[in-house]
Amino acid sequence: MLRHVLDPASHATQNIPVGDFPSGISALPSGKQVFVSNTGSGTVSVIDTHTNKAVALPTGHDPEGVPITPR
Image (cartoon, rainbow, N blue to C red; front, top):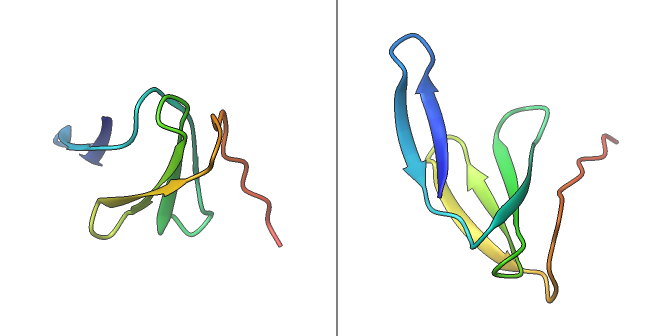
């Protein structure tokens, strides 16, 4: 479960379900997507920051980080 701060002024939060044992997190420079590596479930969760919905993508192994490389 990822706890996401929606409004820093009011401290409003929302829980976003991700995979087991999240071990790394990165965001696109645009802020449109956040990536969470889930070591326990062998997935990477891709979170749409507009909807706060996550989709899990299988990696086939235990991901331990999510580097973002600018083009």
